[in-house]
Amino acid sequence: MRARIILMAADGVSSAAISRQLQCNAHIVGKWRRRFSAEGIAGLNDEPRSGRPVTISQSLTRKVVMTACSKPPRGLSRWSIRTLARELGLPPARIARILRAYDLHPHCLRTFTFSPDPQFKEKLLEVVALYMQPPENAVVLCVDEKTGIQALDRTQPMLPLRAKRPRCWTNEYVRHGTRTVLASLEVKTGRSFAHVKETRTSADFLSFLDELVKRYEDQRLYVVLDNLNTHKNEKARNWLRLHPNVGFHYTPTHASWVNLIECFFSILTRQGLQHSVHKSSKDLERFLKAYFAKYNDHCQPFHWTKGPEKLQHIIELTQQFQAEYAAANL
Picture 1: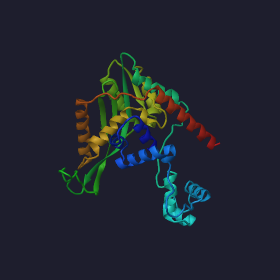
Picture 2: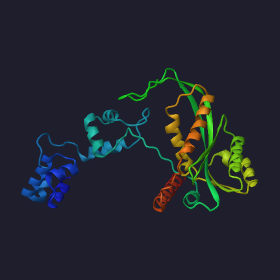
Picture 3: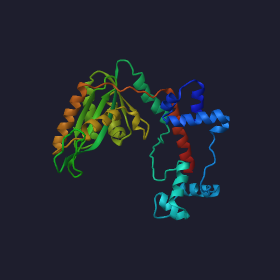
Picture 4: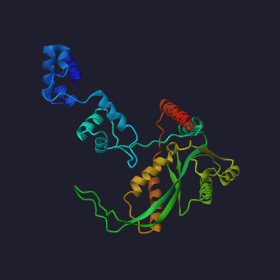
C-alpha cells in the first residue's frame, strides 16, 4: 500500500483521491508521502518500535506450525488455539498470532470431490458439446431425480414479513412424508417436465421416459443422465434398445454438476421449498405440480459458460487427483 501511495502521487493524483481509491485515511497518505520525500525508498520501511523485543524464535514458530498441521492426539478431531496452547505450553495469544501470520485455520474444513472416472475427459466433453452445439433436428434433455423432498409442517403459525423483520417460523416441525421428483429440462428452451412420485424405482424412471417419448414424438432425443443404478441397469438398457430415437449420455462419475438440470433443482429448492409449509404429502405434491406449471410460464434456457480453458483446467486437475489417489493406494 505504501508503494502504491507513492506511485499514485508520482502520477499527480491528489492525497484525497489516493485515500479514496486505497480506502485509507488521508493522514496515512500524507505520512508516507512526507517520509518518501525526506528519506526516499528507505523511508517506506518500518521504524524501530518501542516495547518488549520479539521473543518468538524461528524454531518455536516452526514447531507451532508443524503441530497445527499434524493430526491431534486421540480424542480430538482438530486443533484449536487453546488445545494447541496446552499441548505446547504457550500462551493462547502467541499461538493465535503465529496461526494468523501463516494464515492457518485449524477450525475450518473445506470439502471437495474429484471424479475417479477413467473416461472423465471424454464424458465431460461429450455432454458439453451437446450443450454448446446441439445436433440439428434433435432435442437435448437433461434428466435427473430429486429424492426425499420432505413435507414439513411447523408446530406454530409463521410470522409474516414486516419492516426490519424477516419472515419467522419456529424451529420445531412435523414430518408428513416425502415425495420424489423425476424431471427433465429442455436445454434449448429451459422448459421442464416432471413427475411427482412416492417411490424411486426403475419402473418409475422408465414410465417417465415413456412420457418423454410421447411428448417428443418422432424426434431424436439426446438425454443427459448421471450414473444412478436406475439409469444404467439392465431394464434401462433394454428400454433403450426398444427406442432407437433416444440416446443416453452419462455425466462423469461424481460430476453431476455437469448436468444442467441441477440448476433447475437449485432454483426449485431456493424459490419453492425453503420457505414452504405443507400439511401433508398430498399438499406437497400439489405444490410441486403448481410450481412446475408456474415455472414454465417464465422459464429461460441455461447457457453453459465454462469455455475450453476452464474445461482444460478441470480435466488436468482431475487427472492430477486421479494419479495422486492411485499412487496413495498402491
